[in-house]
Image (cartoon, rainbow, N blue to C red; front, side, top):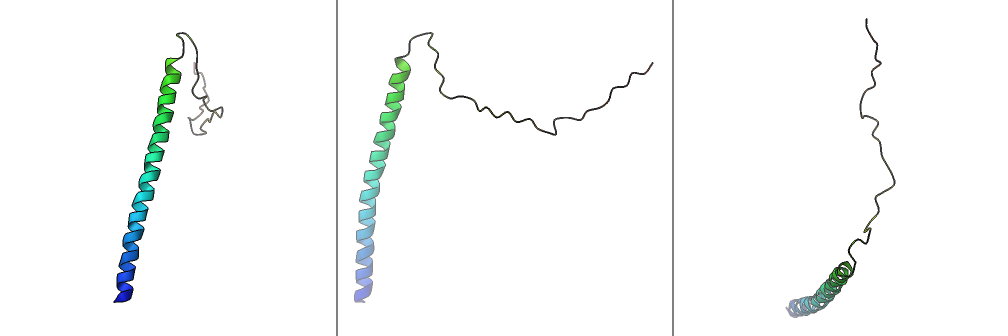
Length: 78
């Protein structure tokens, strides 16, 4: 009986500790992502009209499928 009470008490303490630590990490994560979003917004606003800015470059690997079509010889009939 005593072991069961100790086990329940440990579970309660661990769950409380887990909630506190996860709450801290979640708040920290959302604060950081919010700051990054605000930083990106201010960067977009500071660009002058007519400036060219590339966010990402397209991949250079051009893949051509082998089964695109079937080649048929053309024979002219007169």
